[in-house]
Image (tube, rainbow, N blue to C red; front, side):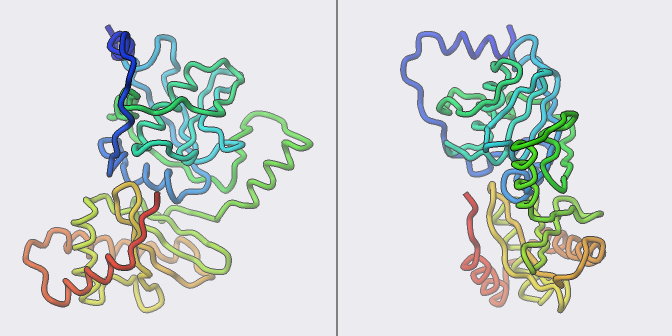
Length: 293
């Protein structure tokens, strides 16, 4: 009996189901956890292919689906005419566990008729499987960042209002590019200012301590022209943000970001107690942190 059948059998006869529990690191246990956080929080237009666990999904399900940051009309999911399925990472979380909400979106899309958007999801509960239970966690998770949302209509001709709507969506996209050589790092231009965001893969507390060690020594900046603004918390991970020259391009920062990553790795490995300066730096970082969702 597959996992999906066991879940259905276990649910029979139950009349009251507990709400979905809060999960501090909802994407822990998934390949590329920092990029899952990036797809959930900071990437405007991106996609990735997810390989399903055939024992965990209904019989006849496709072997892969597409994760997209955003879908038209903020739909949580979509099943195209050809049966291809897309689920949206930024459709909003109705529970304390975005992974469980995305699991709900995936199962709803698998049950939808071809050519049907999923416009609203059932309530996510403690019985709703998480993505970690539905996809092959041994398969790689590779994000593709797009300049716009043309992947919505890939292989299709659009015109009229549909074309106008797509054009408006594309105009709203914040230019974003991965920094080559350092995983989970993204250059973006917002208005007249340019930033680099780096999703750290480590426990938030340990990452904050390592960043504080660097900050106390003046080594948390990329250089004098590329200063650390602070860090925000997202999906249980820490995301430092640097402001860089407004007219700079992603390739201009590859060396400096790689150097920071090496300094950070050394600071993370340190085991000695924090000095007074490092404790002050840590308190300052914490006081300026913002939690996203």
